[in-house]
Image (cartoon, rainbow, N blue to C red; front, side, top):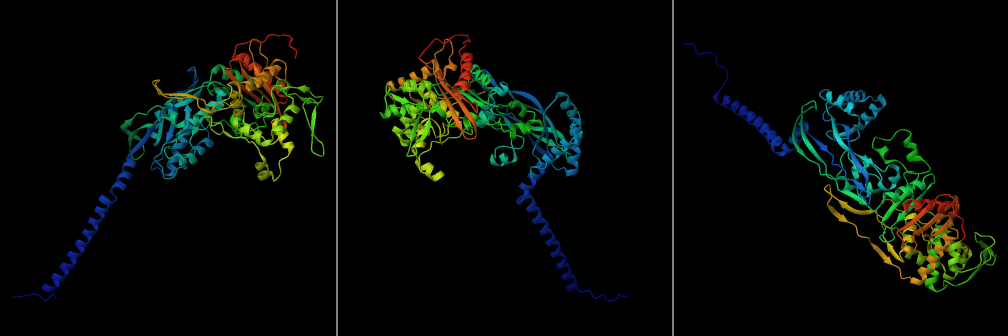
Length: 604
């Protein structure tokens, strides 16, 4: 029987090859098992998140921003429904994104330049492809319907209704309300709670109380397919509306201030001397906050952002000016309380004083002089020489001490953003800043509100209020209370007294007498209102950069003040000729007093 050839295989050889094969199989199984464990357990959460993001997108629903009311519950800022278009690029490549954006722009009847702008915007937030970017807002109902019909062909596009701001008082309260705009990339980095497309308060009350007004956004979990087209809503969380703000502002007063400061580059402030609450604030030029809702038009950009008139600048808080003669009341109180003068002290004004060995002359505004004057006369006629002499008797240290008591040289801490603090100079400041000694001429200048001293109109309002109420320095404020959507009071503001000045009733009476006479027959007579007693003071502040600034401060009624008023016109000229008549018209409107032609029969 044939037994075949010997193939050279042995039992031992076959067993060795089998072992190698088994080892190789187990090695492969080990690698596969390790990879499965790695994917499922170690990196499972990471890949699950990626998987979820590919199919589930969070579509936020913005909360309705809280309203803003005046003290009488008149609506200052409201909301209205508006159509907006949002886009999430998700997993689309650049070409797909470009195609979608081009279609959207055509449906909205926007040109190619707008399409390119929108396209560039989609690339500004790297790594956040699932974020919704607002690419159009305030579109018409017709445009919204056209887009909605094409949604299946527009992956990543969402059309929704969202609330937008309506500034009911428009430009007249622009520096009070401020405005809102979509948060910039820098602001998104600064405020982690914000997300792309969120609006943020940019100025005024909108900025100061942004977190209170903003509310809490809601949203929906939406399932989408691989083309980013919505399939179904998985879960919805309703937004929580923001709380509303009630201001101390009075519409009637605000309207009067805005109406009569228009046409003048300057500011008007009305404050309640009994509480420190702002009744009105108007800075001119103003702007209409509503233009920010639909986006800035081309012509608006250079005007608002680059205009030399600075319409976005709140002169009441940010403007710093020499106070001029309205500062003479500080010198008066300092002299009276320090004992260097009394209300009956007589000083002779011959039109100038001379200082130093070179007989440098410091002139009174009245070149012929005022003759012998007492304090009330000096305030009524704004005699410079009288206050030069008082300032020299006091010296710079005492003058500074009283300026600081009245709040000069530091912020009032009013609840509005961007306040400046002004400057009350002294010997050390001049030495450090200008490397010069302090001279008597510096003291003379400061005694009448000139030289190196700078103040803000809100500081002057606080100062005038303190005279009206006999020495109570209130912290100016604009918030009256916070209420929720149901009208329940969440917080009520209480007037804050910073300090009470220790000034005698006799000395207050002496200064107030001079202010009353200033309006009756003095430099402030152009602010006289028939049927209303007004106490005031004019100021004409010399300005190294241009024309004189015109000031007028007052309170009324004189016997029991309800309002302290400040009017300042940049480069306006004389306070009595320019600012006082503006204040007169404001007071007439506020107190319902009609002007009647009359002859001034009052004589000093």
